[in-house]
Length: 101
Image (cartoon, rainbow, N blue to C red):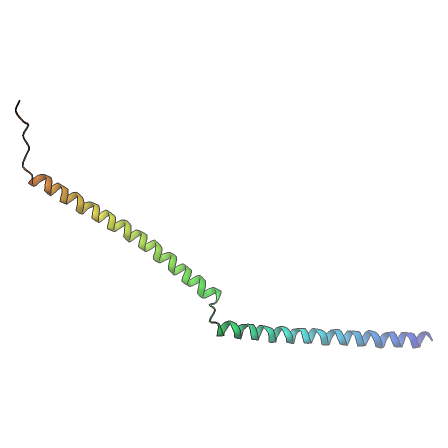
């Protein structure tokens, strides 16, 4: 009886082990299929990848910095132009004399 019980237990253990292996294989297959379908849907929706997003984000940051630098430069140039124009108008005005009392 002991040997018969051991053989039954051995067969059951082997069967459970095989079933676990099959379950792992099915899970791997499901994961692969699910991932492929998810990637297909994302491609169809034209969702950008993380790398593309980061590249565009960096380009936008650089453009913003360049715009700020150009804005400061324009303001400086406009300030010089206004200063020259006001200096010219002061130079061209006749001197004012103080009223006699």
